[in-house]
Amino acid sequence: MSRKARERIANREKHVERRDKMSIHDFTHDRATIEEVFDQSTRMVLYRFLNSGDLNEVNGVVSAGKEARVYWGKKKDGTELAVKIYLTSSAEFKKGMMMYIEGDYRFKNVKRDTRSLIYTWAQKEFRNLQEAARAKVRVPTPIAIESNVLIMEFIGKNGVSAPQLKEQPPNDPEKTYTQLLTYLKRLYQKAELVHGDLSEYNLMIWKGKLVMFDMSQSVPTSHPLAQFLLNRDITNVNRFFSRLGVKVLTNEEVYRKVTG
Ligand SMILES: Nc1ncnc2c1ncn2[C@@H]1O[C@H](COP(=O)(O)OP(=O)(O)O)[C@@H](O)[C@H]1O
Ligand SMILES: [Mg+2]
Image 1 (cartoon, rainbow, N blue to C red):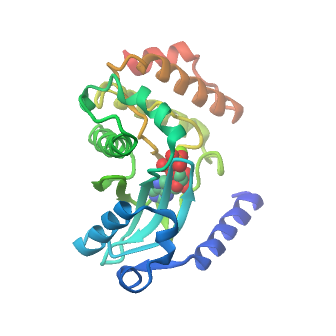
Image 2: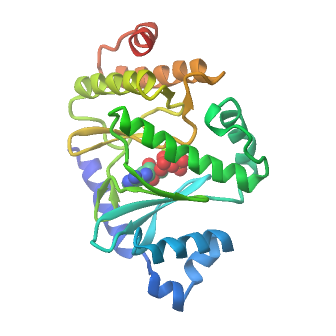
């Protein structure tokens, strides 16, 4: 591991120690932290999860993106969880989402108001993770979904996520590239899905194995955008791996391998 990578991980660990912790206790006695970020209905969903046994505590934020925040949570037995909460306030995001939801046969007749679209978006990620896992693509195992709150397996340890490929290039890039092509083929042929936002930012290595994640935008192969998205995914991963010195297949060869 490079010095830079070690420093980055050390910094992240420091960050984790500073994190606020929220438990069911805080929920009943001091709701301030979550109150600032989430609306009433999101807080109610979290509260229900905290009462249900699926979730025992929600700790600090692991990632604060434009569309979603990911929190580090725990089950009663100490098992770590990732709690991804989609922001219900993002209007910009609504325009982008429509394109992926329309044309997805699994989500016909969904309501078009912003809140319903975001719930569908979260549901879509849950379904995509389930279908990918069934096709033997290593993804965070989805555990529960309600409204805009998705609970899944935490990839990492002690609240520190496994590094993205972007942050920490694989030790054996040839092997990782081959593994990725296998995943893409399984995803396309068994799950009949296209990731749609694949790059070194949405792949991690954990316990020596490649993990694919961030699948809310993934679409069925029958979706009008599927071929365009697949080609874009292939271009992104070929660019990344060729920069690492891997003798990558051409984009066309990968496309044929994945689809044929
Ligand atoms: N299941 C998980 N386990 C651990 N960390 C995760 C998990 N899911 C997401 N993360 C962390 O949160 C970041 C953002 O998650 P991602 O699903 O890519 O959302 P976004 O839509 O914001 O890109 C990831 O890069 C990773 O660091
Ligand atoms: Mg992402």
